[in-house]
Image (cartoon, rainbow, N blue to C red; front, side):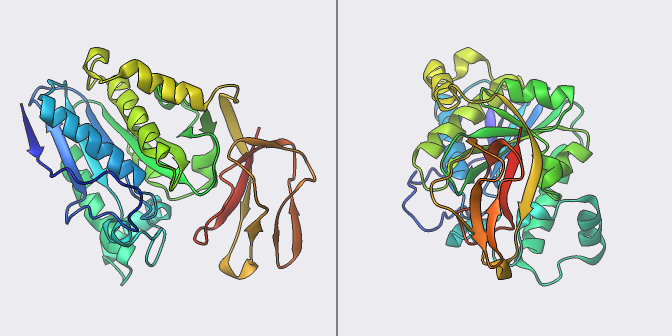
Length: 319
């Protein structure tokens, strides 16, 4: 067995303003050359979300150090390399909002238009194409993210049997409909290719526990897609318990019904203290902007309340 993309382990710290991931979007890969599924786990599509990159480095280190005999091919990827290096969500445009079909086709025809994220996306598209071009088996994607708010981590999935089955094996609550409410995500692109794809929001950006959560979720993905067996995962029960503890007494399935979009000129500000998957009541004041109070349009669960300067999704309401 050989790791075709060897890597150099770096310090797993959340204190640095940025994470140096090097010049390649492929952090590393592990394959014995035996036919099987292709599982891609990506992280850092937003540059202020380094936890997923650190989690993937841990997994790659373990596989390499222990020469784990896997089935198929595992590839770990980083998204917005430049933004990760400086610790910003993005430089010019949100990389995880430009993967809709029209934007991808325009990028292919016209090339980058002077935006840093166009260059990043073109490189990622070329890597994805190279990885999947000659693969005859199942292709799976897990995209790792973190949140600006504290609260319960969750899986983003679509309402199809394949995605639902995959999401259920990752042991966190499943959110359906977010992929429709947020157009242009990497998840949307992979689903359009007919691949099995889910994403995870694995805790608050700077919470050191987010690295553990995302590592545990990534290992569950490798089990669920047949890359590794349960006995090959270090401290499997502890990793499972880490995920189960986060979702204890929480709704296991939530469907997004409302999105509150924001623009920089709105002066949007969430009221302090809201957490992801916290229950809210219709008429409850959730945030304020230049026009005044912003209230919950219905009873439900608040999803991804915005507590960072960058971003155009103020919050979502699910039921």
